[in-house]
Image 1 (cartoon, each protein chain N blue to C red):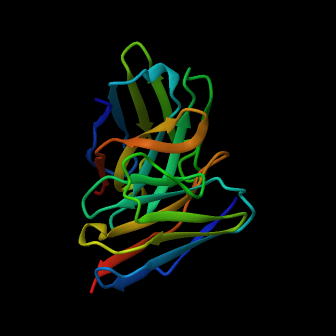
Image 2 (cartoon, chains in turn brown, cyan; image 1 turned 180 degrees about the horizontal axis):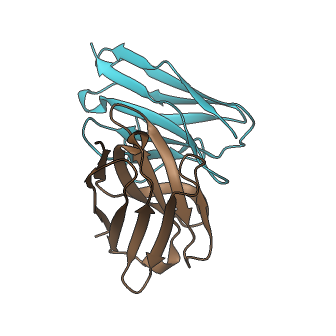
Image 3 (spheres, helix red, strand yellow; image 1 turned 45 degrees about the vertical axis):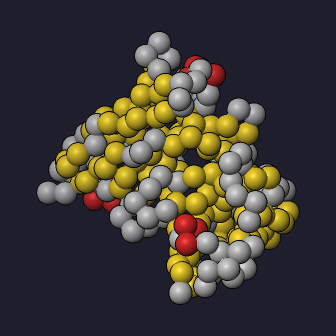
Length: 120
Length: 106
């Protein structure tokens, strides 16, 4: 069964850091590009970051560039998102999503999401 | 950056109605257009990709069309379980979502 399970969300003060994890199972994780997509309360979907299947390439939305870092450990089938200098506007549900093979930036599997709240 | 604009933002229709949601790209994107369905409190689900290809397991009452800058999602006969917010997404080189269309039952 193909599954993505996020963890690591919580309540954090502005300016602090948080690391999200996404555990993958049921597919060959090391063959898939992986993305983070977020959804602020009551708002739409916003792409955050992508990492290539081998971890060599990463791209970020302008809104998080320089503050967030995406990484992966293919030996552990796990994706990460290190979030530094958090702001109130980073408050959202964060989803990890699997990229469809041979269809870059298209997502066929999503995790259940983990909630990040940035508040003093 | 390419912007995706959906209309309407919200829609109320009756069971059995045919409904259409439109999505416009600020530049041509060929057919690199996907539609996702997000039911209340749930995770987004891929419905359609390549503008008109139905993802496996998606009911045939859903269909998509378009190319270039203008796209549509059609539900031929609205069912109660179709209550959701629908998002279009431009993919292939970078990702951009529309703002969503909230579909309700009258």
